[in-house]
Amino acid sequence: MKAETKFFGTIDIDDDKVLDFPMGIIGFEELNHFALIFDSEREERSKISWLQSMEEPLMVMPVINPDEITDDGYHPIIEDELMKQIGDPADEDLLILVTMSIPSDLTKMTANLKAPIIINTTNGKAMQVIVENEDYKVKYNVYDAIERLKKAGE
Image (cartoon, rainbow, N blue to C red; front, side, top):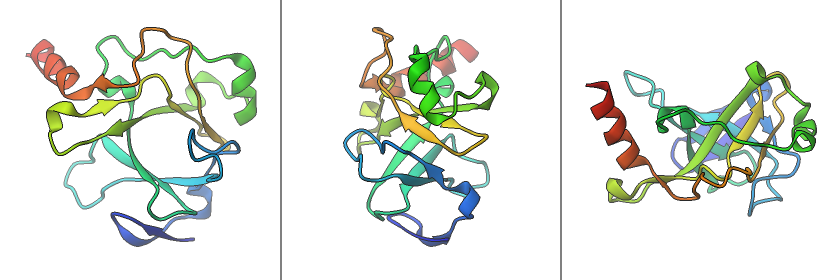
């Protein structure tokens, strides 16, 4: 399938790589088909990928695995009833990503830990949910977290 994208121009996406969001994404409920795009021009694969709408070329969001930016891992509390909407996957069949806001001042880069993207990797169904964890922020400072993780690794 050909996809028009904001950052990568026209690209080919295998049909089996298109994610189905039956309920859309928060604020964009009418958009139901997305693909994860990686910047393959880099030598190393970037930790940030792009969630690209297959229906609206200008709708693209940077996403990251929250374990890459959190100190103690990411453990969202999600109602079991919600998980049924994407096929009630086993934990090992889940891919969890969080959306990011990347302003020109990278010290203000944030991730939304409160509303992760949950992907069932076995059937390609996905959803965005609001988690019950009260300590997860909508604007979690990614820059500060990366600096903390660098210092801890030294």
